[in-house]
Image (cartoon, rainbow, N blue to C red; front, side, top):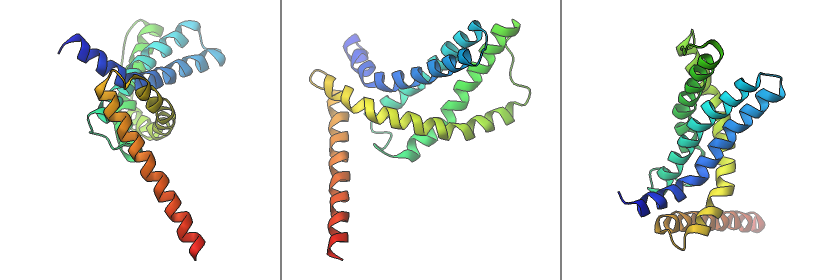
Length: 177
């Protein structure tokens, strides 16, 4: 894979990467606000932010390659049902390593992962909401020199147009009743 192709992939993945990173940085900031030690807050920013960022970028690539339907909640919810618990597990192990000097798994690993799976739905909603606001604008911006971004942006534009037309048809049907 040449560097130009990697650059194009990076541009397509950037919005999801940024949204995931924002999630981790926000969690670290909240840890600092509630009085956790600075090291703990920084650990959260990195140990949660980086996995969420990488997974967020991966989601953008899945969209780019047509593996995820544009504009749907179910695909993003399923993606984060797996991804969020993995990111939280990395965060948990890293935080324990920083605080105790030894990385270790949570005592009830299955319970921990199950709970994170439940919480993942909330993260998926926030991720999708922010991603849908940032990604199409970014992809439009880079579409002039990135054919992959152009294809994804065109797909988003076609989806938005179809949603608009469906909404207008519903309005017309209600008006004729």
